Amino acid sequence: MNLLKATNENISRAADVIKNGGLVAFPTETVYGLGANGLDPVATAKIFEAKNRPSFNPLILHIPSYNYIEEICDINLSKIENVVTKFWPGPLTLVLPKRDIVPDIITAGHPTVAVRIPRHPVAKELIEKAETPVAAPSANAFSQLSPTEAIHVVNQLGDKVDMILDGGSCKVGVESTIIQIQDDEYTLLRPGGLPVEDIEELVGKKLNREIPINETPNSPGQLPFHYSPKIPLKIIGRFDEEILKDKKVGALFFKSKVLDHKFADTRFLSENGNLAEAAANLFAFLHDMEKEDLDLIIAEPFKEEGLGRAIMDRLNKAAKRFE
Ligand code: TXA
Ligand code: MG
Image (cartoon, rainbow, N blue to C red):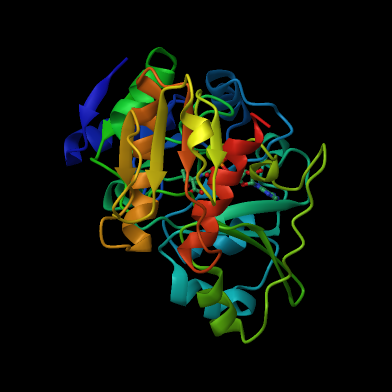
């Protein structure tokens, strides 16, 4: 394992690793990604192997600029210009009709491909220097918590990747919002770091919200138990003392408040109730709590508005696993 600070020199080295078919974990503004040359099926296959990820789960291609869009997507840039000029670079992924140049392993055989231009300077420089679209899922082992710090990647995938670029903690902290654009239909596939309301305001209509949950979902981020800590997590609206009985319980609250109960660990995602800060802390706090010897994590529910929707989505999925 090769953990390196994300200096320009090391980013160039990382780009060479990608050009040579290797795997590099790198920071984005949402979470750390596990990158490989997205036009090379053999390199991409290594991502599935390292993560132990089912191969029906398609990957996002990260590109450095608009220039690549028409190369990999069967779409006229003018059709999505309003969305991309407003929200890219940033925490938004678009699912668009694909071109033949995109390998089937990237799209899991779907006729669409997921594309994103990230905002993080390290991600941007790496993708530019790699001179290819970079396929990157979150750099966690399958079904575990997404990494928001380099150390999270080290712990989960350390010996399985060629290089990890350390660029500090991810500012957004939850994965990108994914929408599919087909003709003039906009469908939300995953709530994430860009509030759905911002997109709706721009396109002037509500996004189609039908998120199908089934065995072969369009977006396996939709699998009900995708983002899970190893300790059982319960979302609790009204607290009942019973729950503390014979258990070491950690509690995750939105903002600071006076508590009547003593928990083994108490955390406030944002002391002042700032949703962006809460999202940025979510996975990092869960990673920390996972290391403690807790029997249960209880989490306060979030209102499903703005970033609260993405936070609640991740909490629901974490809780689902233990139902
Ligand atoms: O913020 C993010 O999106 C991070 C960073 C690294 O960019 N990446 C990320 O990738 O979260 P991943 O693989 O963990 O989640 C991507 C989701 C998956 O649920 C996948 O199923 C969905 O995107 N997806 C990819 N291609 C798709 C497609 N063609 N149609 C529908 N969903 C797709
Ligand atoms: Mg993921």
